[in-house]
Image (cartoon, rainbow over all chains, first blue to last red; front, side):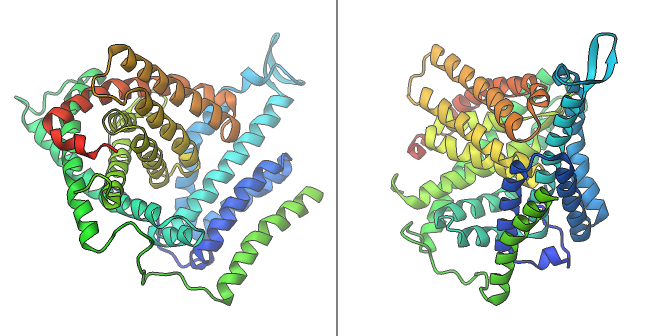
Length: 257
Length: 170
C-alpha cells in the first residue's frame, strides 16, 4: 500500500525549502478565493498545471488531473440546476440547459477546485513526509502532534499488511474460497470477522508502543533533542520571502490587468 | 501503565489514526458514483469504545491522512473537520457503559447528518459548488449509516474479544 505521495525528482520545486512551499501553498489557496475573475482563474490554473508539468512531469500531472475529472464531470452534469438565472445559452423549448450565469459559475468553481487540488498535490509530491513534518514543526506544530503523525505514518503499512493477511486467512476458512457471495451485503458480512481481528491486533499493540516510547525517554514534557533539523540560512530566508511575495504580486498584477 | 501517561495517549491516538487511514484506503467497495470506504466504521468504533476526544482526533486526522496519501489533498481539510466532528458527536452521545437503543439511534442519526451535511456545506462552499455537492449526499448517507451499524457491532465484538480495552478510555 502506498504510504506517501513523494515522487523523486530534481526540479526547482523539489529543491525549494519545504517551509517556503508550505507558505506558498497556503497563501495561494487563500488568494484564489479573493479573485473572482474568470480570466485570472484561467491564469492561476494554467500556472498550477505548468508548475506540475515542470516539477513532476507530464504523466504525473495527467494522473493528478485524472483524479479530478469525475468531480468536474458532476459539476457539468448539475449545470442545468443553476441555469434558471441569467441569459439562456442552450435550451430545449422552455427549459434552459445552460445560462451565462451558470456557465460563469461553473468555470469559476472548477478552476478554483483544479488549482487547489494541483497545488496541494504538488506540495506532497515534491516533499518527503519527514520534511513536511519538520516544516510544520518550524511553524510551531506541537511536538506531540508531530510525534502522533509520524507514528501513525509508520503504523499504516504494518496495519494494512496485517489486514490483508487476516482477510486472506478468513477467506480460506470458507468451504470453498472461490465461491464467495457477490452481493454488497455479503461482502460486508464477510468483512466483519476481519475488521474485529485487525482492531484487536491494533489495540493490543498500543501498550507495547507506549512502553517503547517511555523506554526511549519520552515523558511528554517538552520536545526531545532532535538531530534531524531543517537548515536555516540566507537561501531559506530568500525562498520564504519569495514564497510570500510571489503570490501577492501575481494576485495584484492580474487583478489590475 | 498509568492511565494518565502521555506516552499511552500518544500511542492510542497514533495507532487508531493509522487504523482509520487503513480502513479508509484499503477497503473500497465500488458503487455507481465512486466508492464506499470503511473509514466511518473505524471512527464509530473509536467513538463508541474510547470516547469523544479520541474519536475527534483519530477521526479527523485519519481521514485527512488518507486523503493526502490517496491523492485527494484538496479534500483533507473538509474530511478533517467533518469526520472529526462526527467522532466527537458520537462519543458525546454514547459515552457510557450501558447504552440504550435510542442513544444508538440518535448517535447514528447525528453521524449521518454531520457527514452528509458537512460534506455538502463545506465542499459546496469551498470546492465543488452546491450543485455538484448535492450528488454526494446519498453516498455519504449510506456510508455513514453503514459505518454506525458496523461500528457498533465491531465495538461490541472487540470489547468481548479484548476486555482490557476499557483501560484505554480517557
